[in-house]
Length: 357
Image (cartoon, rainbow, N blue to C red; front, side, top):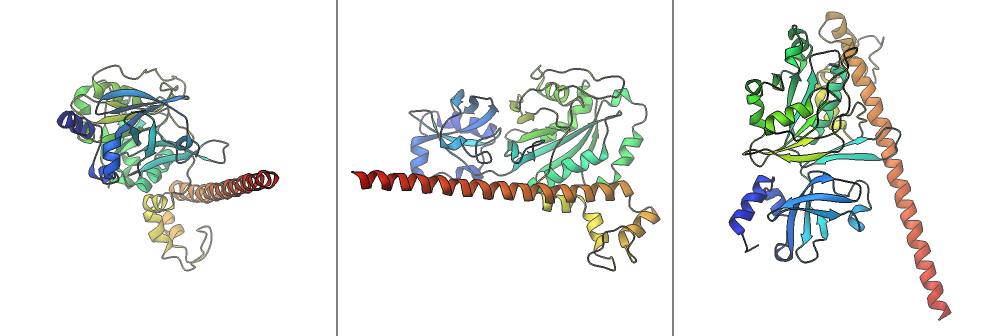
Protein backbone atom coordinates (compact mmCIF):
# COMPACT_ATOMS: atom_id res chain seq x y z
CA UNK A 1 0.00 0.00 0.00
CA UNK A 2 3.01 2.29 -0.17
CA UNK A 3 3.01 2.89 -3.93
CA UNK A 4 0.67 5.59 -5.28
CA UNK A 5 -0.75 5.86 -1.78
CA UNK A 6 -2.34 9.28 -2.20
CA UNK A 7 -3.89 8.66 -5.61
CA UNK A 8 -4.80 5.10 -4.67
CA UNK A 9 -6.55 6.13 -1.47
CA UNK A 10 -8.45 8.82 -3.35
CA UNK A 11 -9.55 6.31 -5.98
CA UNK A 12 -10.76 3.87 -3.34
CA UNK A 13 -12.75 6.60 -1.59
CA UNK A 14 -14.40 7.53 -4.88
CA UNK A 15 -15.35 3.86 -5.30
CA UNK A 16 -17.06 3.86 -1.90
CA UNK A 17 -14.22 2.66 0.36
CA UNK A 18 -15.08 3.62 3.97
CA UNK A 19 -13.74 2.63 7.43
CA UNK A 20 -16.38 -0.13 7.64
CA UNK A 21 -14.48 -2.07 4.96
CA UNK A 22 -10.96 -0.94 5.91
CA UNK A 23 -11.36 -2.21 9.47
CA UNK A 24 -11.99 -5.73 8.19
CA UNK A 25 -8.43 -6.12 6.85
CA UNK A 26 -5.54 -7.58 8.81
CA UNK A 27 -2.01 -6.16 8.54
CA UNK A 28 -0.98 -9.11 6.36
CA UNK A 29 -3.89 -8.52 4.04
CA UNK A 30 -2.96 -4.85 3.67
CA UNK A 31 0.49 -6.00 2.60
CA UNK A 32 -0.41 -8.96 0.39
CA UNK A 33 -3.80 -8.00 -1.04
CA UNK A 34 -5.48 -5.17 -2.90
CA UNK A 35 -9.14 -4.17 -2.34
CA UNK A 36 -11.25 -3.89 -5.49
CA UNK A 37 -14.92 -3.27 -6.08
CA UNK A 38 -17.12 -5.41 -8.32
CA UNK A 39 -18.44 -3.15 -11.07
CA UNK A 40 -20.23 -5.75 -13.19
CA UNK A 41 -20.94 -9.48 -13.17
CA UNK A 42 -20.83 -11.58 -16.32
CA UNK A 43 -21.22 -15.31 -16.82
CA UNK A 44 -17.52 -16.14 -16.75
CA UNK A 45 -15.89 -13.06 -15.22
CA UNK A 46 -16.24 -10.04 -12.95
CA UNK A 47 -15.26 -6.52 -13.90
CA UNK A 48 -13.54 -4.95 -10.87
CA UNK A 49 -11.97 -1.56 -10.15
CA UNK A 50 -9.39 -0.49 -7.60
CA UNK A 51 -6.45 1.82 -7.02
CA UNK A 52 -4.78 0.68 -10.26
CA UNK A 53 -7.79 0.92 -12.52
CA UNK A 54 -10.13 -1.70 -13.96
CA UNK A 55 -9.44 -5.37 -14.67
CA UNK A 56 -11.29 -8.66 -15.21
CA UNK A 57 -11.44 -11.46 -12.64
CA UNK A 58 -12.39 -14.99 -13.63
CA UNK A 59 -15.40 -16.53 -11.90
CA UNK A 60 -13.85 -19.66 -10.43
CA UNK A 61 -12.89 -21.15 -7.08
CA UNK A 62 -14.54 -21.73 -3.72
CA UNK A 63 -15.57 -18.07 -3.39
CA UNK A 64 -18.12 -18.54 -6.19
CA UNK A 65 -19.67 -21.85 -5.15
CA UNK A 66 -22.29 -20.59 -2.66
CA UNK A 67 -25.15 -18.79 -4.42
CA UNK A 68 -25.65 -16.29 -1.57
CA UNK A 69 -22.02 -15.80 -0.64
CA UNK A 70 -20.55 -15.34 -4.10
CA UNK A 71 -19.65 -11.78 -5.11
CA UNK A 72 -22.28 -9.56 -6.68
CA UNK A 73 -22.26 -6.03 -8.08
CA UNK A 74 -21.08 -3.57 -5.43
CA UNK A 75 -19.12 -6.10 -3.37
CA UNK A 76 -15.56 -5.47 -2.19
CA UNK A 77 -13.01 -8.21 -2.84
CA UNK A 78 -9.42 -8.70 -1.79
CA UNK A 79 -7.16 -9.70 -4.69
CA UNK A 80 -3.78 -11.30 -4.20
CA UNK A 81 -1.30 -8.70 -5.45
CA UNK A 82 0.75 -11.28 -7.34
CA UNK A 83 -1.75 -13.77 -8.77
CA UNK A 84 -4.66 -11.28 -9.07
CA UNK A 85 -6.97 -13.98 -7.79
CA UNK A 86 -9.70 -13.17 -5.25
CA UNK A 87 -8.78 -14.12 -1.69
CA UNK A 88 -12.06 -13.29 0.03
CA UNK A 89 -15.12 -11.08 -0.06
CA UNK A 90 -15.49 -8.41 2.61
CA UNK A 91 -18.55 -8.22 4.86
CA UNK A 92 -21.38 -6.22 3.29
CA UNK A 93 -22.89 -3.04 4.68
CA UNK A 94 -26.15 -3.77 2.85
CA UNK A 95 -27.51 -6.43 0.50
CA UNK A 96 -30.38 -6.52 -1.96
CA UNK A 97 -31.71 -9.84 -3.14
CA UNK A 98 -34.93 -11.34 -4.46
CA UNK A 99 -36.55 -14.71 -4.91
CA UNK A 100 -36.10 -15.47 -8.58
CA UNK A 101 -39.34 -16.51 -10.33
CA UNK A 102 -39.87 -20.26 -10.02
CA UNK A 103 -36.64 -20.79 -8.04
CA UNK A 104 -35.96 -22.14 -4.56
CA UNK A 105 -32.99 -19.85 -4.03
CA UNK A 106 -32.55 -16.13 -3.63
CA UNK A 107 -30.93 -14.12 -6.40
CA UNK A 108 -28.44 -11.41 -5.45
CA UNK A 109 -29.13 -7.95 -6.86
CA UNK A 110 -26.43 -5.70 -5.39
CA UNK A 111 -24.38 -5.07 -2.24
CA UNK A 112 -23.09 -2.07 -0.31
CA UNK A 113 -25.70 0.38 -1.58
CA UNK A 114 -25.99 3.74 0.22
CA UNK A 115 -28.99 5.38 -1.47
CA UNK A 116 -31.91 4.02 -3.50
CA UNK A 117 -33.96 5.89 -6.07
CA UNK A 118 -37.29 4.07 -6.44
CA UNK A 119 -38.35 5.00 -9.93
CA UNK A 120 -41.90 4.97 -11.28
CA UNK A 121 -43.48 6.81 -14.17
CA UNK A 122 -46.42 9.16 -14.61
CA UNK A 123 -48.43 6.83 -16.84
CA UNK A 124 -50.35 3.54 -16.76
CA UNK A 125 -47.29 1.71 -15.41
CA UNK A 126 -47.54 3.55 -12.06
CA UNK A 127 -48.22 0.84 -9.48
CA UNK A 128 -48.47 1.72 -5.78
CA UNK A 129 -48.37 -1.90 -4.63
CA UNK A 130 -45.14 -2.44 -6.53
CA UNK A 131 -43.62 0.66 -4.94
CA UNK A 132 -44.54 -0.69 -1.48
CA UNK A 133 -42.79 -3.93 -2.40
CA UNK A 134 -39.62 -2.05 -3.34
CA UNK A 135 -39.80 -0.01 -0.14
CA UNK A 136 -40.03 -3.14 2.04
CA UNK A 137 -36.77 -4.32 0.45
CA UNK A 138 -35.07 -0.94 0.86
CA UNK A 139 -36.17 -0.49 4.48
CA UNK A 140 -34.86 -3.98 5.32
CA UNK A 141 -31.46 -2.99 3.93
CA UNK A 142 -31.49 0.27 5.91
CA UNK A 143 -30.66 2.46 2.90
CA UNK A 144 -31.62 6.07 2.32
CA UNK A 145 -34.56 6.14 -0.12
CA UNK A 146 -36.09 8.67 -2.49
CA UNK A 147 -39.24 8.29 -4.60
CA UNK A 148 -38.79 9.48 -8.18
CA UNK A 149 -41.64 10.02 -10.62
CA UNK A 150 -40.36 10.14 -14.20
CA UNK A 151 -41.87 11.12 -17.56
CA UNK A 152 -43.42 14.20 -15.96
CA UNK A 153 -43.47 15.81 -19.40
CA UNK A 154 -45.89 13.14 -20.67
CA UNK A 155 -48.59 13.79 -18.07
CA UNK A 156 -50.82 16.78 -17.40
CA UNK A 157 -52.12 15.41 -14.10
CA UNK A 158 -49.22 14.96 -11.68
CA UNK A 159 -51.36 15.44 -8.60
CA UNK A 160 -52.99 12.02 -8.83
CA UNK A 161 -49.59 10.33 -8.51
CA UNK A 162 -48.45 12.63 -5.72
CA UNK A 163 -51.65 12.00 -3.76
CA UNK A 164 -51.27 8.24 -4.21
CA UNK A 165 -47.93 8.47 -2.40
CA UNK A 166 -49.17 10.59 0.51
CA UNK A 167 -48.64 7.69 2.95
CA UNK A 168 -44.91 8.01 2.29
CA UNK A 169 -44.41 11.60 3.33
CA UNK A 170 -41.43 10.48 5.40
CA UNK A 171 -39.58 10.02 2.08
CA UNK A 172 -38.47 12.67 -0.41
CA UNK A 173 -40.60 12.73 -3.58
CA UNK A 174 -39.20 14.18 -6.79
CA UNK A 175 -41.00 14.77 -10.09
CA UNK A 176 -38.53 14.72 -12.98
CA UNK A 177 -38.12 14.72 -16.72
CA UNK A 178 -35.12 12.54 -17.46
CA UNK A 179 -34.17 14.71 -20.43
CA UNK A 180 -34.35 18.01 -18.52
CA UNK A 181 -31.17 18.59 -16.46
CA UNK A 182 -32.85 21.25 -14.33
CA UNK A 183 -35.37 18.78 -12.89
CA UNK A 184 -32.58 16.29 -12.10
CA UNK A 185 -30.49 18.65 -9.97
CA UNK A 186 -32.07 17.52 -6.64
CA UNK A 187 -31.09 13.93 -7.46
CA UNK A 188 -27.41 14.81 -7.39
CA UNK A 189 -27.61 15.06 -3.61
CA UNK A 190 -27.90 11.26 -3.66
CA UNK A 191 -24.92 10.87 -6.01
CA UNK A 192 -22.16 12.51 -4.03
CA UNK A 193 -18.57 11.33 -4.38
CA UNK A 194 -17.99 7.98 -2.69
CA UNK A 195 -21.70 7.10 -2.42
CA UNK A 196 -23.40 4.29 -4.32
CA UNK A 197 -26.89 4.82 -5.67
CA UNK A 198 -29.25 2.12 -6.94
CA UNK A 199 -32.11 2.74 -9.34
CA UNK A 200 -34.98 0.32 -8.75
CA UNK A 201 -38.04 0.15 -10.94
CA UNK A 202 -39.75 -1.88 -13.62
CA UNK A 203 -38.78 -1.84 -17.29
CA UNK A 204 -39.45 1.31 -19.26
CA UNK A 205 -39.92 3.75 -16.36
CA UNK A 206 -36.86 5.76 -17.37
CA UNK A 207 -34.03 4.40 -15.22
CA UNK A 208 -31.52 4.25 -18.07
CA UNK A 209 -32.49 7.76 -19.23
CA UNK A 210 -31.88 9.02 -15.68
CA UNK A 211 -28.54 7.24 -15.57
CA UNK A 212 -27.41 8.79 -18.86
CA UNK A 213 -28.58 12.25 -17.85
CA UNK A 214 -26.86 12.14 -14.46
CA UNK A 215 -23.67 10.77 -16.00
CA UNK A 216 -23.70 13.22 -18.88
CA UNK A 217 -23.04 10.46 -21.42
CA UNK A 218 -24.71 7.48 -23.05
CA UNK A 219 -23.80 4.74 -20.58
CA UNK A 220 -26.95 2.65 -20.92
CA UNK A 221 -29.24 1.87 -23.84
CA UNK A 222 -32.74 3.31 -23.77
CA UNK A 223 -35.97 2.49 -25.56
CA UNK A 224 -39.48 3.85 -25.74
CA UNK A 225 -42.65 2.58 -24.12
CA UNK A 226 -45.55 0.81 -25.79
CA UNK A 227 -48.31 3.31 -26.40
CA UNK A 228 -51.16 0.89 -25.67
CA UNK A 229 -50.29 0.12 -22.04
CA UNK A 230 -47.27 2.32 -21.17
CA UNK A 231 -45.23 -0.83 -20.50
CA UNK A 232 -41.52 -0.72 -21.16
CA UNK A 233 -39.08 -3.13 -22.68
CA UNK A 234 -35.92 -4.31 -20.94
CA UNK A 235 -33.14 -1.93 -21.97
CA UNK A 236 -30.49 -3.01 -19.43
CA UNK A 237 -29.08 -6.53 -19.88
CA UNK A 238 -27.04 -6.90 -16.71
CA UNK A 239 -26.41 -5.09 -13.44
CA UNK A 240 -23.43 -2.75 -13.45
CA UNK A 241 -21.98 0.20 -11.53
CA UNK A 242 -21.25 3.37 -13.48
CA UNK A 243 -18.99 6.15 -12.11
CA UNK A 244 -20.42 9.66 -12.42
CA UNK A 245 -17.91 12.43 -13.19
CA UNK A 246 -17.24 14.34 -9.96
CA UNK A 247 -19.84 12.16 -8.25
CA UNK A 248 -20.56 8.71 -6.91
CA UNK A 249 -21.51 5.39 -8.50
CA UNK A 250 -24.86 4.53 -10.07
CA UNK A 251 -26.24 1.01 -10.25
CA UNK A 252 -28.34 0.26 -13.29
CA UNK A 253 -30.17 -3.05 -13.31
CA UNK A 254 -32.63 -4.89 -15.55
CA UNK A 255 -36.24 -3.95 -14.82
CA UNK A 256 -37.80 -6.36 -12.34
CA UNK A 257 -41.54 -6.79 -12.60
CA UNK A 258 -41.21 -9.81 -10.33
CA UNK A 259 -39.39 -9.00 -7.10
CA UNK A 260 -40.07 -11.91 -4.78
CA UNK A 261 -39.46 -11.01 -1.13
CA UNK A 262 -37.92 -13.27 1.51
CA UNK A 263 -36.32 -12.64 4.91
CA UNK A 264 -37.50 -9.00 4.97
CA UNK A 265 -39.84 -9.13 7.97
CA UNK A 266 -38.38 -5.99 9.56
CA UNK A 267 -38.55 -4.07 6.29
CA UNK A 268 -42.15 -5.14 5.75
CA UNK A 269 -43.10 -4.11 9.27
CA UNK A 270 -41.43 -0.72 8.77
CA UNK A 271 -43.17 -0.10 5.44
CA UNK A 272 -46.60 -0.99 6.86
CA UNK A 273 -46.08 0.46 10.33
CA UNK A 274 -49.46 2.23 10.12
CA UNK A 275 -51.29 -1.10 9.75
CA UNK A 276 -49.19 -2.67 12.49
CA UNK A 277 -50.17 0.13 14.86
CA UNK A 278 -53.85 -0.35 14.03
CA UNK A 279 -53.60 -4.14 14.38
CA UNK A 280 -52.21 -3.73 17.91
CA UNK A 281 -55.50 -2.07 18.88
CA UNK A 282 -57.72 -4.92 17.61
CA UNK A 283 -59.83 -6.70 20.22
CA UNK A 284 -58.30 -10.09 19.41
CA UNK A 285 -54.56 -10.63 19.16
CA UNK A 286 -55.03 -13.13 16.31
CA UNK A 287 -57.40 -10.90 14.36
CA UNK A 288 -57.32 -11.60 10.61
CA UNK A 289 -58.72 -8.13 9.89
CA UNK A 290 -61.65 -9.48 7.92
CA UNK A 291 -64.99 -9.48 9.78
CA UNK A 292 -63.94 -9.99 13.41
CA UNK A 293 -65.66 -7.76 16.00
CA UNK A 294 -63.51 -4.99 17.39
CA UNK A 295 -61.14 -4.94 14.39
CA UNK A 296 -59.35 -1.59 14.43
CA UNK A 297 -58.03 -2.16 10.91
CA UNK A 298 -61.48 -2.61 9.38
CA UNK A 299 -62.73 0.38 11.36
CA UNK A 300 -59.94 2.47 9.81
CA UNK A 301 -60.97 1.32 6.32
CA UNK A 302 -64.60 2.24 6.98
CA UNK A 303 -63.62 5.70 8.21
CA UNK A 304 -61.37 6.29 5.21
CA UNK A 305 -58.19 6.42 7.31
CA UNK A 306 -56.80 3.29 5.61
CA UNK A 307 -57.05 2.24 1.98
CA UNK A 308 -58.28 -1.34 1.59
CA UNK A 309 -55.82 -1.86 -1.26
CA UNK A 310 -52.95 -1.18 1.14
CA UNK A 311 -54.30 -3.75 3.62
CA UNK A 312 -54.64 -6.39 0.89
CA UNK A 313 -51.15 -5.73 -0.37
CA UNK A 314 -49.72 -6.00 3.16
CA UNK A 315 -51.50 -9.33 3.66
CA UNK A 316 -50.27 -10.56 0.30
CA UNK A 317 -46.65 -9.60 1.03
CA UNK A 318 -46.84 -11.10 4.55
CA UNK A 319 -47.90 -14.45 3.04
CA UNK A 320 -45.24 -14.20 0.35
CA UNK A 321 -42.42 -13.43 2.79
CA UNK A 322 -43.47 -16.31 5.07
CA UNK A 323 -43.67 -18.73 2.13
CA UNK A 324 -40.37 -17.70 0.54
CA UNK A 325 -38.52 -17.58 3.87
CA UNK A 326 -39.70 -21.12 4.57
CA UNK A 327 -38.52 -22.20 1.12
CA UNK A 328 -35.10 -20.65 1.71
CA UNK A 329 -34.82 -22.32 5.12
CA UNK A 330 -35.71 -25.69 3.60
CA UNK A 331 -33.21 -25.17 0.78
CA UNK A 332 -30.46 -24.29 3.26
CA UNK A 333 -31.29 -27.40 5.30
CA UNK A 334 -31.19 -29.57 2.18
CA UNK A 335 -27.85 -28.05 1.16
CA UNK A 336 -26.39 -28.68 4.62
CA UNK A 337 -27.64 -32.28 4.59
CA UNK A 338 -26.16 -32.85 1.13
CA UNK A 339 -22.81 -31.32 2.18
CA UNK A 340 -22.71 -33.55 5.25
CA UNK A 341 -23.50 -36.57 3.07
CA UNK A 342 -20.69 -35.69 0.64
CA UNK A 343 -18.21 -35.25 3.50
CA UNK A 344 -19.25 -38.60 4.96
CA UNK A 345 -18.77 -40.36 1.62
CA UNK A 346 -15.36 -38.74 1.12
CA UNK A 347 -14.27 -39.74 4.64
CA UNK A 348 -15.45 -43.34 4.13
CA UNK A 349 -13.60 -43.54 0.81
CA UNK A 350 -10.46 -42.19 2.46
CA UNK A 351 -10.71 -44.77 5.25
CA UNK A 352 -11.34 -47.50 2.71
CA UNK A 353 -8.25 -46.57 0.69
CA UNK A 354 -6.17 -46.35 3.84
CA UNK A 355 -7.34 -49.77 4.96
CA UNK A 356 -6.46 -51.34 1.64
CA UNK A 357 -2.87 -50.10 1.69
